[in-house]
Image 1 (tube, rainbow, N blue to C red):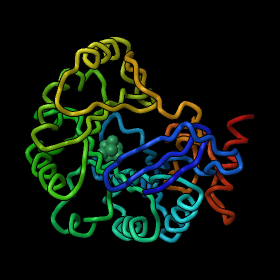
Image 2 (tube, rainbow, N blue to C red; image 1 turned 120 degrees about the vertical axis):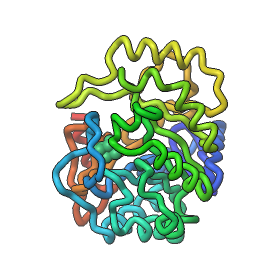
Image 3 (cartoon, rainbow, N blue to C red; image 1 turned 60 degrees about the vertical axis):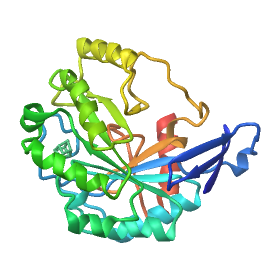
Length: 299
Ligand code: SF4
């Protein structure tokens, strides 16, 4: 169990089960609040072996030094972060992935999550990650021919990978919602349930330089679908998404960089992976960069 103090009280977290308990009758003094964000996503590499048209990952070549990732995780752990989420690009193309996950599991109390396309999770990789990753998020944006058109890979191959992942890890599906994928939501939930997923994460497509995002009509259909949902797999969404339904916010005062930050594959700290502004993490460490970023964001 890890304890994090903040403006909303005492937060107790168990990385093995994902259990969160907030003791909000406790009011920790400000000097005792965690100085790290609750969760930090880390793009360990920009490399990816797929070419999804709606991908917003940077396309320049960049990869993090293993020693930097070790150092930043140690610092974030000591400053009260609860978890790191490795992504990219495709994190399984990062050759140090098993080592950084093992470091998090053995040397810190951080929970490790990972966002992956899932297609490289063979027996060898699974054996090297077993016991060091607390939750795997697999990006699946449609079933059958929709998936194959968008991702350019076999859906049968994906289903075999989901079975392999489900054998050793808690896992869930991430779905980018746009006009191509909105019609597959029911079928996706069925696939998620069949393979034992414990979460279905809805991510309305964000507008980027090359794409217009989910669009008004798609968002309207999504809101209706969510409101009528009675399926077997719990739904989740990102903090940025507006799904038009009431959601509980257990930590209403832990917002912005207190809640979440992103480190890109060039070693720059940002408020999110979409954020244009960022602060390069230097020798003085990740918390110093995040403090500087908070000043930049407030200016
Ligand atoms: S799998 Fe992810 S990182 Fe790779 S191209 Fe597709 S969206 Fe981008």
